[in-house]
Image (cartoon, rainbow, N blue to C red; front, side, top):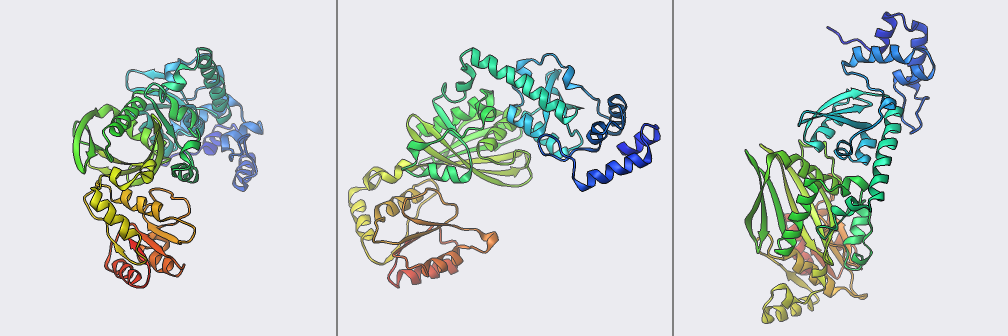
Length: 444
């Protein structure tokens, strides 16, 4: 049986004429009518605005079409603060959704402007880790209720001294910084760490939920243990957390399956990823300041049989300023390495297992080589640290900017030193070797 549309139901009920309905649909298709936020108005909102149907007739027809009950947000008098805290204000505003009550222990009832939008429903369900019971409401009513209830909630917190505002960061000694890629890149340099800005996405990053506290605890512990990577791997009954320390993966703890989705969502929000996307891999990054240390975390997600696996690669910008001996080099090797960096041409290869310090060594070399008389170009995937005064190229295979193509272009830029992140194929290796034989110092 074909599903009826709103206009058909209203017309069959005799609540609107065919001519009026046609005129409104044509106006809607032309995109002339917008709400206060600049969004295109839905058919029901247009009909109400032009007073062609009553609100009761419209909500009754919408209930028949969507099979979702209507809730008038304007008549809501109070919402429990614990319910409001389940959906951060920024997410509630973006999805135009207002949580109103719990139905049992695992179901949340919420009023949403577009209950038929499966992508928005999936994003909210994934973020909350619980089943949703949607009610529909009009956009302006929902946004007004968000202003009313979240505004009063924030005022109450401020009146109590703002204890909740700092709990996500201050209690654990962790400060998260998330923003645009450009801002993060600026803050990742060793000169920019003193200017780390608080581009924290308000409630999304500050609510002290169990997932927030767990993520802060994992990162803090990993930093204390000098781990280079954090692995979160979903399994049949739970998720295992492993740290890579001195090149070896070591089990740290297990996360209950009930918290798996909320922990992943927390990391995706911090990394500016799409929390609704679970079927494909994603990459992101964010900054963390722990006891004066500035860490740049590169986050990678990948779908597996039991859920999304997450790997966080931890990079410390201050490592670039250290001496070779402090990086673990014996004195004689450190001296030999410095001599190699002083040569006008040649090929220096840094090899070793994952987490052994290859990238740190290369970036130390770039930092020590940099001076006004030398032109340095790097080809990387991704750019791990920003080094002041070095021309860094980000590989983009989709745009045809492969390692080989990037190195060829770099050779035309009159370089003294070229750093190639990895020699991934024969072509790139051959180009690097020829560059090293023609008066350039090549690092890889």
